[in-house]
Image (cartoon, rainbow, N blue to C red; front, side, top):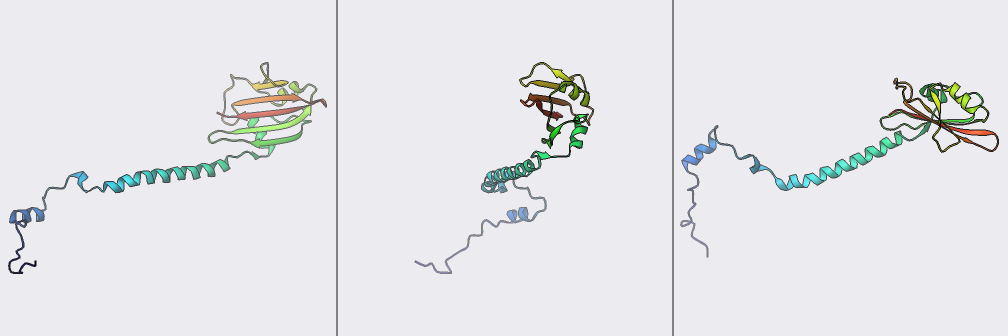
Length: 177
């Protein structure tokens, strides 16, 4: 069963002098590029990195969406963006910043007396003209030929809904694209 230690010989044929010279030579040939890659680790890393990137984007979207939620602002900031001022006699004024990721947007809602409303709104916001195509009682918008100068809104939309008590609800939305 066991061989005698004297008869046991160690095969040293693989240690030839020529091979020893190749292993110790500074100019020995390099191994091919793909021969040392641990492919199972690379393949396992791909879905791991994809999952981490997905969760990072999910967290970023959640954090950034909170920063972009509509918030109430001072009406002077809104008026400067509109390029005019809220007309005198307006009550229940609420100004909101509804900005997006890459644009600026403001909304103002208020109540006014109905008499000469279109004239009063165009006097308060000189860029507005009366629009004929609208589903509300009265609509105004800025002139399309006007160019955005960086500080004023590029688009303004005003919708007016008449109430029974001789007042009107005015909704002004202005934004940049």
